[in-house]
Image (cartoon, rainbow, N blue to C red; front, side, top):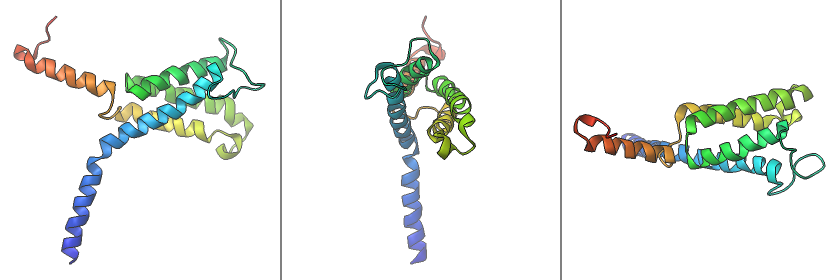
Length: 159
């Protein structure tokens, strides 16, 4: 009985592991969607105003630059376009946000409201190494590039 259970468990584990690339895509998409909301709230007060006093961030301010990166970097991540460099840039933005905006308010992230910045920082750092997953524009571009190399003699690209 135990050998049979082990075989079934290994089949289940194997099937679950086969979902890893797709779960990576889902993680990227959900995180990007949530991240974009922070940026659009700063730039457009949508879905609501989060700036002190309401309204939007003044153009050119640090909050405006952060909102721009969060909105449009998040959009690129959502689509999975230029995922690795964009994720690396956004990871750095979140590190700066934490040390500039949250850490001076106290040691503990749960008390200085910096836990989301830390989570995004390390999630984006992971995405910069892991890539976008199969459900992305990057993967589509890579598949099309591989297909075009297979069609040309010697794998040379036509110019």
